[in-house]
Image (cartoon, rainbow, N blue to C red):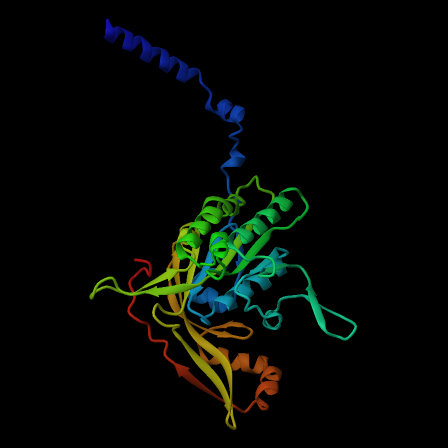
Length: 357
């Protein structure tokens, strides 16, 4: 008897399934195809030197990209290159400068377009152009940064800011959370928790959802992530490069680019020397694609960074750069007949296949 009831129930269920239209159910619930389709992948290009060494066009739009490494290893050069090209594409660069090392002069030398606003005495009082800018004058906590970004995306959704946006944050790890500020303690665990709550559980998902075909705009986040080196956990262990601000941004990032080495910057200075005068001409630095969830390609190599962007690591490119910016070097060195001398050690320190292993 029980078996007969089970058979009857199974037949009834099968009959319902045959008459059921899943497409109609999706439409009724608002699960249209547009909600699952993604736009064709776009890119904000970086210099050919970067493209050649990484096998990537540049910064993937609609994603989160982390540029991490020790100080003065090429992170800001990559960030400004991306901002310059975003501006050329009509994408609105949104600069979030919480480390307060920003240089308008450097950005201008690399090609960022803006106008200097001057007072009656000729002193620069502001900068105007196709970009937004905020720093520690407005953004003193992780929560402030999150509110600022969320507000801009809300205004965009209302039609009050009709541009694709690319947020350029310099840098994660340079600003504490609200609790750290109120307690007058820069607590790393609290800061990491705030990053996870504000970004990992909220804003990062909004960035990624802008890739959907039904989203009228595409938003991108490029963030410099400060790092620290964790000592080996055992005599035979390896040092590890760790991100300040916790790991939530690493987990959500599609692309992670590491500049330099683990235990040292991994750069060498190329100096212009003339009659005892020494001026930094360029730096040679190591670059590694640590995480790539678009093409999967991971690469490591060397690149030359200059005041005007990246160059290939070869003498011909350096000579061409010297000639292209001869007025710049004539002003700094007083002559174009100067020697180039390299100082420093790019030798790779012992690394594991994945710096976070």
